[in-house]
Every structure is written in structure tokens, then in C-alpha cells.
Length: 144
Image (cartoon, rainbow, N blue to C red; front, side, top):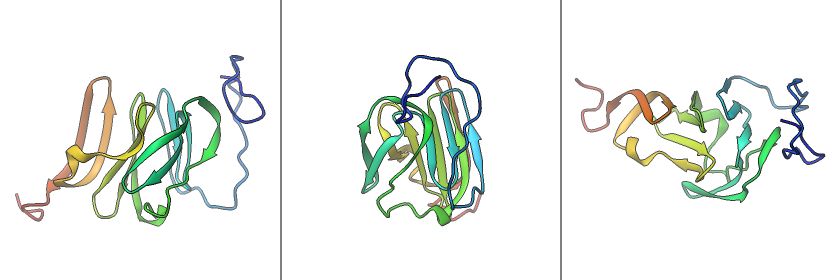
């Protein structure tokens, strides 16, 4: 995907890697078909320009961006608490040290994955119509 001067898709294909200058260290990265997550936090893909308020965001720019855009997480998600990244075809996810899962997708922007709120999640991946996670029930406090 090509990009204009603002990093938005302009219809011209370009597969050359782009240099992203940042003083923040990159400690992890995940990529899938339509999303890439670089842990600093920068996100590329469909509708990643979001602002988090509470535990859900609104999309501020629904266009496809092929150049990284910094994600404003509104002080709710401390990047130092992110312990794992997950990916899917149309989304990217992060897992916090307390087991909560947040995902970015093109429809809802950044949001908490409420279906997993009863679990301390260690790993989470999605695919075409499928999700898989590794974790334990908060109700049993890790006991099987």
C-alpha cells in the first residue's frame, strides 16, 4: 500500500520497509494480514488512529494507514504493563500484566475484550471466525 504525506493509503502499492524514528525502545512486534503492532505503542493498519477513554475508544480516523501512527491510550494503558502481543487478520491485541486483554480492530478501534474478563489471560490470538486464549479463571485463582 502506498501512502500520502500523512501516512494514509493512496492506492499505490509500496512494499519497501519504512523507517520510523522514535526515541522509545521497541521491545516487541507482531504482524498479521491487516495489522502490525510495535510495542512502544505504534499501530499500523485499518482504523488504528484511536483515542482511549475508559476501556473503549472511538475511531478518530477510519482510513487505512501504512505509516505508523502513535496510539494515544489516554493514560489508561501503561505500555510498561504490556506483557504480550497477539494478532489476528483484522485486529491486534495486547495483554496486560493483570491478564486483561485489549484489542484494536477496524470496526471498534481499541477496546477491552469483555468476553475474557473472567480470565487471567496469558496468550490470545484470533483468526477468521476463531479465537484462542491461554489463561485461567479468575474465580479459581489459577487452581484447576
